[in-house]
Picture (cartoon, rainbow, N blue to C red):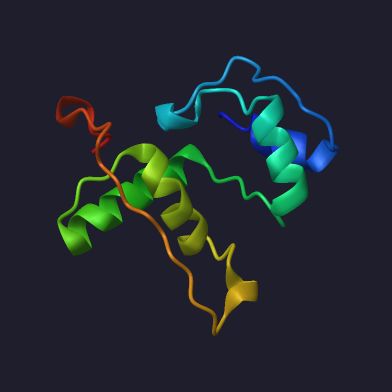
Length: 109
């Protein structure tokens, strides 16, 4: 996957992408020095999800909302479905759904 931000956050130092392979091509770009510093200062946690969870989330959004979202936009939905936000029970959580980078001929279902 494309988890350099996750690995960098956990290690405390900027780590490069290592042959990223993911359906979420919007996450293929490396974190970068400036963004890493912002993450270190302002982010409480970074969550990693599986490729299968991304596809399930994309399909769920399509089936329930009739919205085709790009894989990168499905990542937070996948994390939500995987229970990653249980500590936020009772709080408001916003997720941005976008579809600007969708190739309808290559949907994973």
